[in-house]
Each structure stands twice: as C-alpha cells, then as structure tokens.
Image 1 (cartoon, rainbow, N blue to C red):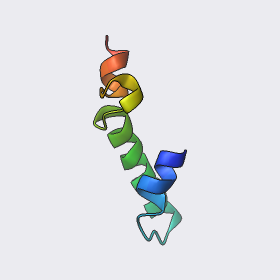
Image 2 (image 1 turned 180 degrees about the horizontal axis):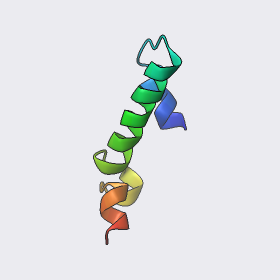
Image 3 (image 1 turned 60 degrees about the horizontal axis):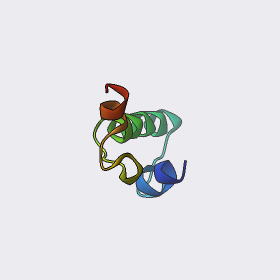
Length: 51
C-alpha cells in the first residue's frame, strides 16, 4: 500500500469519493500492467504472471 499512497493518493488533491475510486483504480491498472518492479527484475506483474 506504500506505493499507492506515495505515487497516487498523496500526489493528487482528490475531492470526492468517486474521484478517489477512479484514480486508485487507474493506478492499480498502471501498477500491475505497465510499471516495472525492481523485485521482478524490472518486469511488470502482468508479464511475470503470463510466463
């Protein structure tokens, strides 16, 4: 949850619950499908899952 807080929640000024849900949902899509992870040898979780 640290990444979500520091890369999404704390970086934006979200005003409504629906806006928060939308932004966090978009962040999870990015985090799992596009963002490389050092612990996965700079691959995405999606790429590792599909191996």
